[in-house]
Image (cartoon, rainbow, N blue to C red):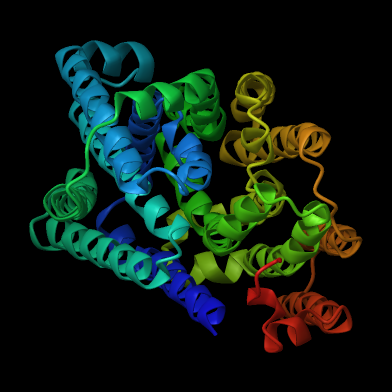
Length: 475
C-alpha cells in the first residue's frame, strides 16, 4: 500500500504542474505575444546553459552516490556539500554575466534588448537547478508526500506571481519570468534554511572530491545537452524569427507534458532500479526490464494522446496566432517516447562519464547539422523535424551503449507499443495532408487511442495495476 500511495503523491504534482501552466496559457497569451515567448525561450536557453555548467553534472552523480553511500554516510552531508559548491559557482557565473551582459546580448543573441532578460533567465535556472537536489533527496528517500507538497507549492507560487506581474502590473515578459524567480527562490531559501538549521549538516571536502571525480567528465555532456536540447529555439531567435521561436516554445511546452509525465514516473521507478542495480541478485536485470514495462506503457499513452489531439489542445488554449504550434506538438510528442530509454541511468551506474560526454557531443553535432538548414528553409516546423530526427538517432545510439554496459532485459511488449505509436504518428501526418471532414478526423483519432488502450488490456497492463504489481519492489 505504501507503493501505491507514493505513486499517487508523485502523480498529483505531475497533473497539476503540467496542467496549471497549460490551463493559464489563454490568459498569458492575451497579454504576451509570440515575440515575447521567443525572448523568454532565449533567456531560458542562456540560463540553462550557464547553470548547467555551474552544476558540473553533480545532480546525476548525487542520484547515484546517494545509494552507494547511504549505508555508511549521512545523505544530508552529501546534499549540503553539493549545493554549497554550486552556489559559489553560480555567483561567479552571475557576476561575469552581469558584467558583460550587453556584449553577450549583441554577440550571441543578435538582440540588444534582451540583456536584462538573460540575467533573469540565469537567476531562475540557477535557483531551479539547486531545488532539483532537494527534490532528488526526497525522491531517493522515498518521501513522496513531502516531494509532492513542495513541488505543488512551487507551481502555484510561480503561476500566481507571474499572473500578478503580467496581468495586474503589466510588466510584460519581464514579469512572467520574475514571478518564476520569486517562486523558486522562496522555495530554495525555505529548504536551505531547514537543511542548515534543522538537519545541521557538515561540508565534506572528501565527498566533494569523490563526486567531482565522477561528475567532471559529465560537464561537457551538460554543455552539449543544453545546446542540443535548446539549439532549435536559439537558432530561430538568432536569425530574427522571434515569433517562430515563441510559437515553437509554446508547442514544446505542451508536447513536454509527455516528457514531464515520464520524468514523474522516473521518481517512482528510479529508486527501485538503483537499489536493484546495486544488489547481488543475479536476475536483477531481467526483473528491472519487467518492472519498467508498465511505466513505458503509461508514458506512451500520455505522449500518444498529446500527439493525437494537438490541434484541439492548441485551438482551445491559445489565439489563432499560436495555432501553427499544433504540428510541432505532434512531432515533439513522439520524441518524448524515445527519451524514456535514457532515464534508467545505465551509463552513469557503469561509471561511463566520458562516454556520456562523447555521445552528447555527437548528439549536438547532429542536431546542429540538421537544424540550421531545416530552420532556414522551413522555420519552426523545420526545427521540430530536425530535433525529432537527431533526437531519435541519438537515443538509439545511447541505448546501444547503455545496453552494452548495463544490459537491462526489456520485454517484447515494448516493441509492440513503440511500433504502434510510430504507425499512429505516420497516419496522423497523412490524415492532416488530406481533405477530410474534421468529424471523421476526430473519430479516427479516438479509434487510435481506443486500440492502444485495448493493447494495454490485452497485455494485462491494467490487471497488473489493479493487483499492485506495478508498485511492488523488484525483489
